[in-house]
Image (cartoon, rainbow, N blue to C red; front, side):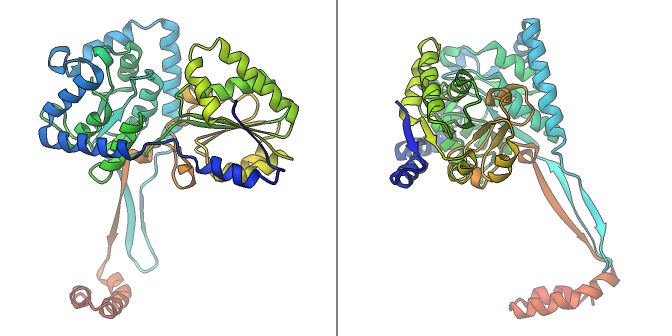
Length: 428
């Protein structure tokens, strides 16, 4: 059974603090293993990548092929069932349109002192996209990672995806072709992230690595930040659902299980103000688990990490949600706006009874690559900005440097940097 908490109980504070602080991400052993793999990839390049691919994915890259040919991706798209292709194309259009609005404008202006200043945004030259392929294959992740990069103007998109036994999901290849991915490599794990960051004889290095993966992938991105840019360090998936008794318990149970089925370490939490409704949802979860194809994984997740929290009023959930800072927050209530305004920390918020989190995973438009592990307190989901950088610029005339230069000289002298002061003073 999942954890049951009552916010009015005297024991609630301690129990909720334990829930907030519980760790579900990588341990020290993972960190050590990843460090060793990355050092090996940096030292031996392709040789190391091939060794780890053989060990973890069970196939010989030199025999099965490192790069998945473009023609194979094109064929996968051409062979798609028309209904499925239409769904992918709808998702791609909505994702592209949403992210196009994120692209920031350049600034170029002259202030009252006559100083020209501003900022220019440019895309990184190359991005690496990690697409999971172990427990499941996600064409939606291809679209969510590749399309913001295309909107940003990235010149080269390199995708890596693990292919256990040398097999790859054709739908992933079709999505890669639809999204404009330039090259696809049949590798995964920390070794693939290392290859993207350092480059090998076969794989050219990139500037940014994005995309979700397992604990080893997340740890590899964390360790390589600085060598390359990353989107975030992602951990196990999370959902918080706020629901009142006017909901259908079966709907809410399905929403909770939509994240629980990802992985045994995923977390699903329900906030409600009605104890009978909480019981009804718990019973509905048990019924749905009985015939869910992913029931074994979802059951372990729900039993180990799930929680049902009873609050006096739903608005009382807001400060508790902020402490959790969940990846996904679903407000399944008639008027979600007051709670929407009250909550500060969440990766993405889904408003109203007819907006299940799962629609955002595919065709909503906003990105589904989101901060986990309470990182929504200080970070955001994947966006166009993850593939761009801002360059500021400044231009002075003889008149404008005369206006602001003396202050610069005074500050440089106060800091004990005479060459700085002279560099300005000689122009005055």
